[in-house]
Length: 440
Image 1 (cartoon, rainbow, N blue to C red):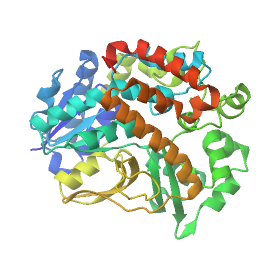
Image 2 (image 1 turned 90 degrees about the vertical axis):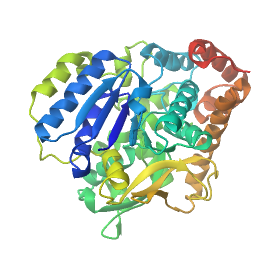
Image 3 (image 1 turned 180 degrees about the vertical axis):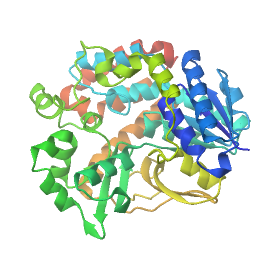
Image 4 (image 1 turned 30 degrees about the vertical axis):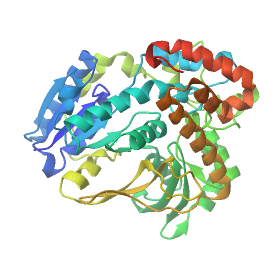
């Protein structure tokens, strides 16, 4: 019997998808699913969702719930983490304070100034979780789904002994989106994707040996397709390679789209989730959908609806990775977040990169990718080096070093002077003081 700990099990849609995927593998039909969350209501509904899956799949898996992280981790063979440190009002401040200084954010959970301060709140917590794993389940496999992915994974991979990688569905999700646009079967598309999380690029994207990029350029001449992802499509048409994460996210990661009102209007305002008006409720930035406002009813409706047991697995990699490592050993290739170590020679060796990784009974093995195209490497290097500096600052609790990392952020530096960036960061430090503790 294998034990899987879900830290942040109250992310119920994700939890139930991964649990359903796990229980499709014979090796895990008797698994122990240890659900942990600090929200008792969400935890209870996560349990009920998992029990429904077990019942309808007619397997012998068991579910336990706890608000004690150590209890969930004790003896776990696999750990999945989807936690968020801080309430919605903390996230709101991450967005509103930069907005006051003229730095327009969209999601603010991955990079730029908001992502860096989110990392400052999360990294100490994740190091604490890793210390517990080292004590309670040292041989576990830790799959992280929490953002900011790159900075969290780099901190854990360089400063703990835990076998951890980070997963994001944007790689397979974007590949599937492009396959639909081009009317080719997704399972027949071949690609190589590399860079850093949310800023990885498909250096190869083909079908039956044929490069699909020329057809994609033709497709984007049609406004109906160009307008679906204005930021990403513009980046592809100008830079030559398609980036993985959504337009809303990528508009924050560079200096091109959010530094002036006219650019926001042109590239962001018509795309769902790309433009945030700070006067609106948090729903407008995608934190909660209308269904989530009626959480209990939404969850109960799902529990009361019979499962389609013949439906394919979700597009998350977690269950297949666990099966490769802990189950029948069938290998799987996925894009994971790992320390570079020369896999992409023109990115920093100690950066956390998102590259192809193989999971098998022999463990996780990252793949050598080779150099990124120069124009892409310049962009990604800026991101990687900025985030390296931010992680080092957070581990050292070095206030000035963190401010200097924000000074290197493309969006912040496109809008603000050095003095203004420092003032903005000082205000964010004050807003986050309950989470950050003492910094030198």
